[in-house]
Image (cartoon, rainbow, N blue to C red):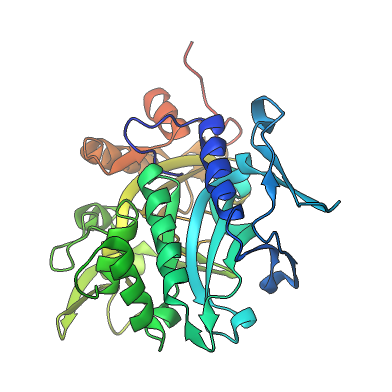
Length: 377
């Protein structure tokens, strides 16, 4: 889920109000295009407001309070957006077919996905219509783009992020982009990419020290020791499972100053994970079809930003129990060690548990046919 800045009112109305104001500021810019849809899904429609569009105030209450209407000057065409379904204002720089695969500069309205979880999908984005002049990056326009990103991130650090595609970071336009970020953030020298991202959106930049061990290291070692469990990595159209009993531990590798972590033996099935991006561990228990409607007991290792998981945006990987039931009865010999793991680490600031897990922890593991278990009161 999205983070909430300390002291920030975190309600649907408050989030919609921020998205409304930020979107309205962009609409006032003459060089902005509203894009609806995604090329990956076959079509995009483009609306050219030319700085003369109006974002009408909300007129509905409760769960519909995020709905807004974009009216175009002297035109019957209009657009409805539900800011209540938006979870992030994502400033994105990525190669674009519209720019002959040079980087485009966009603000994507990322929406809530299945299960009410944040996703990487967007249905509306705001694009700089002409970020290049005569094939060269328009420096003043890009500086203004980053200044707006910095302003929005300062106002609601929990709702604003900056994503730069790896192809852009290593591409020919990268030095010009970094120079624009330096000017926008008042830096005297051109920053590295980590420094640039931290200056613009400090709340979403990684604070991990690459020389130090990942915070989740000890927790992961213990989770890999859980019986009858799997290490699960879920990506678009790919679900990878490693039975933990077949994995030969966790191994640290260092080459030319770069540290990586390998799970499993070199001469057997194994994987490499960037454990430094894990910022939170979540213990979860939720009914799923693969357990016949019973609870899936999961230890989630979560990233600060998108991880590639199409179901859970921050779900980098997880450790999941394979068979937590014998018939209708819970297998306490494999479930109780998950509870014990949570109890050992629950006082860590980066460890959390969902509501169902905490209820089951207190009341005891339910039968498969009663996934919700007894409720207090």
